[in-house]
Length: 146
Image 1 (cartoon, rainbow, N blue to C red):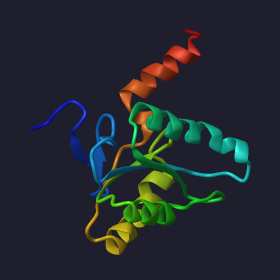
Image 2 (cartoon, one colour):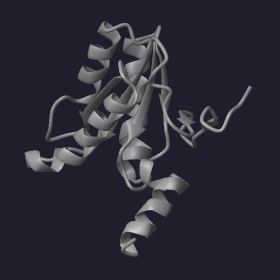
Image 3 (cartoon, rainbow, N blue to C red):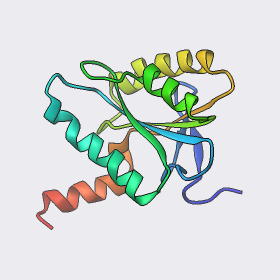
Image 4 (tube, rainbow, N blue to C red):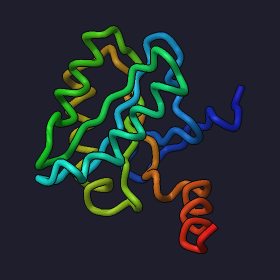
């Protein structure tokens, strides 16, 4: 049965996108907030704030941040940590405004390697966060000064 927060769709690269909120409260389910990364430690603050907010909203949530480059942990390290905590179903949330080269090319290769390293783990890739209509609406409200 499909619900508003449980819709899975196939992306062009064959990975799956998970519509709506990740179901972080379910036992064995984890979420990785995947961002580009930066040498500047202040750059990480907004991503880590999302992680903290998720932990507040969903006590016991298995959630962590991971970065493509220039920051730690990288995606494989974060997933190994979650696997060690018993996560068997993982949603990777690309914290990008759009589906650019990193989301289209780099992330699918990383996810394929994760699936090979963790064959017992279901890995779902959500669409880029900035392309979610709710995020678009929120950004428009902020830009309009509301």
